[in-house]
Length: 94
Ligand SMILES: [Zn+2]
Image 1 (spheres, rainbow, N blue to C red):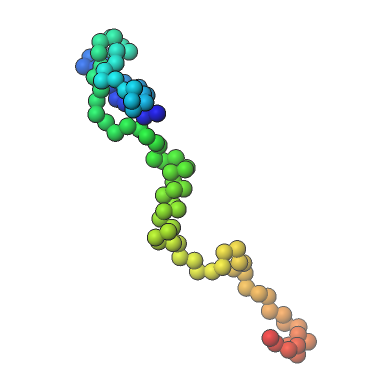
Image 2 (image 1 turned 90 degrees about the horizontal axis):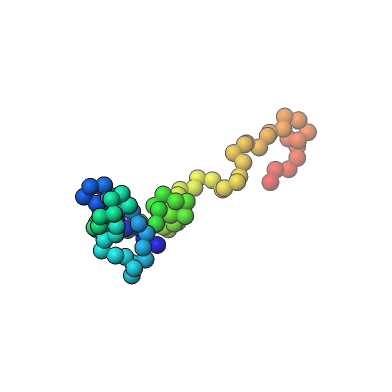
């Protein structure tokens, strides 16, 4: 449900959630009970910094500019150990 901003000249702004169809032009101010007029503002349809929003942003970004990978994911960076045993030198190399 979107949140709308209502402004009282005396008490300031207050936010109320209404469905788009049920939103009134003014409400009774919670401070002084005088009418508080609706202020045109972007309704809070969603929270931008939520994990779900970040996941959508990352997914959309990776479709156009995928991250560069320099090695196989999960592969060990450690070099293979070289044996110094002279008998191993005689073994066939592949
Ligand atoms: Zn007021």
